[in-house]
Image (cartoon, rainbow, N blue to C red):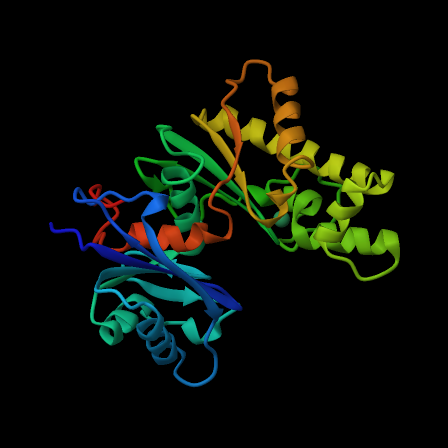
Length: 310
Ligand SMILES: [Zn+2]
């Protein structure tokens, strides 16, 4: 198969869309320094959003692009490319986004799951490059994990793998959105941290406010963050015991406070490990562009087994 020189990766978010245009090497491989353009623009809404997305892409991506990938913020049938459900972008429900975009843009576009695409990019092009496999944790509003092995994030028998944020650590703990109590997400999910810090301060707050207070040495903030990293370390130990990955990568918006999250979590994991292996625990490197890079990796790959891509 001939690999197109230019590939575009479109990370379709609930509010903003990020686009990476990259050029692949002669052998079809990619590296993060292969980026030639990247853009961010508001995700189209209203009438015919696919058409508006395609028009916008055609205007900004002034390259002879041969293939594209697009992430879907929702549940996707990756075999057919059809979106089963998108809570944040309801216009996607039932859409075959890859085909619809491809028809308008004039090159094949493959739709991929946003979280798994970002994990694959981080494992193959970011902090996980050079490792045989990696477990990638994304700490954001919610918590997701993905084991990337053989260049692909494992989907699971029911396409439901990686929900580590909903492993309960305390059956008597706080109620989680999933209906259980004491899930990891109730300790370190962005929404929970914001809500708990807001309750403590008595005014509206975000998780970022909590970390700023932590950096300033606020004891209550540091206690809350300490509980969060203890819960995360417990989760990481479980992942190590289950999968024995070559590396653990921690990314997502919450992990941006590296000294408050990644470093203490790694210390707690290594302190608590008994029989466990001690893989490196690393900060993610691609940041907010991981999803777009994952879509670039998917571009030009007709099937998950297509190993010449990426
Ligand atoms: Zn839960």
